[in-house]
Image (tube, rainbow, N blue to C red):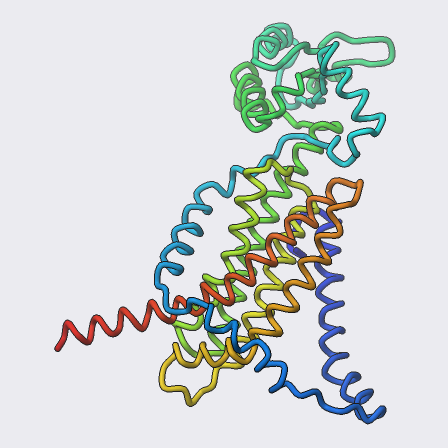
Length: 380
């Protein structure tokens, strides 16, 4: 998140990284000292593990279909990742009964809601093309009115006539597809002013649209960089291509699940939903690291190693996942809608991460083992 062009997101990423680093250092140093100081007795991990041994038989680790399904879902999701909504939906920050939303519904029902884009035009002979440009812009779909004449105290040309200002009023409906609208305005300006003319979108509406596109760019970049770092981490820990592939597929599954749910329900893209992806990926990687580190190096096969790891870590992974899921689900009762969306998405992502670790992760090994067995049989 620190690579984001949005200051609030980048600052949160830096602070979260620093906080997690300090938390890890505290667990490794301060916690053992406190346990030794108070002479705490060591819990019987073997007893806790045996308590969940019965449920281990229900984990279908030998179903190659899990792997095929997960790969297809992840590949299909990348084709539609740019379909996340980027329209201006600032009113979703308020609950349904808030006066802003109530007045907005009245405006949509009885009037024509509009937003304005302020456009600064430079480096062109504007006066000769001004009227034709105004008429062309007013003919675009979604454009209601173009303010191109001076008002008292509000000039439209600079003193030298090389710069001008247009106020383009558009409908809220047109902003459902902001890229199409803005590209149409830019192409119209370029057709009248030529390559020497420059147009810069300013004003509040322009900033909101730019922020929405920056949010989506931040999400894609952060997930790609995190995915590469995650793959390198598992490659260094396991020194195995199969283990690394299984970990990447298992941890991509909760991200894809959250994406599909957000796309289907129509949750808007904002800082809260972006953080949901990062939180889900972090929690999923944490559990997968426990499984990878618990795989015994002296196992006869990778499938046996992962079964031993799941037998050892299944209880802790399951219990912590449910605790985290229920904790984040409590955020869904918030009246601040971005927090509500964040809680719902992380709740779903944590459960998907649990499924990825206990079902998809071992199924990759079963799939690899089955493929290897078939190759041996064909060679024989």
